[in-house]
Image (tube, rainbow, N blue to C red; front, side, top):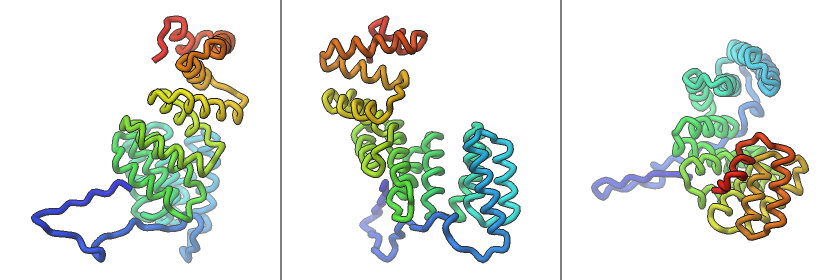
Length: 258
């Protein structure tokens, strides 16, 4: 956790005065006697499906309907924030996330989503605090997602060492986490640890037969760094064959590898 401790004129904070982060089960899993809760949950479930299908207008309607049924249901405001963030209406997203966090300060799903939103808006320290709170919550079913988001947030702060630690935690939770493995390879390449970078990129390629331009370009640069000319040439040919118009292939032709 990123915790600041101020000591002024020799004063100290007693253990009783220190407030530990709240730990809650996800609000969607908690029982409630609120009359409108069943309707709110149904609308959030529908809205989440519409969000995943990129039907943003309908997803927003479902979020608002859920709030109408139960204005104390944090996932309804979380859904609203996610929709607004997805369509880049960040000023509208922020109060929705804030209300979700006010209603359920220890909800790991809220802290994960709101934490990443804060990171994406340049508030990395505040975002990291929420992400790590979510990752350490024993009730969170997807702690790897929060660790991966924390890694991405730390990359925004250009802290490769701390980011590597969070990505390693993410992969420990989910060994299929392609995003974390990609950035572990990328970080190790930047830190001149070519063999370790190659191990990560090879692992990722074995787990994901479909290989995008980013992954091929990274693998090419790693093999080139290691002096494996034949392997680098193979990836260059794959770039030419599959992504001839890509920026990565143009960089290869121009000798821009950094």
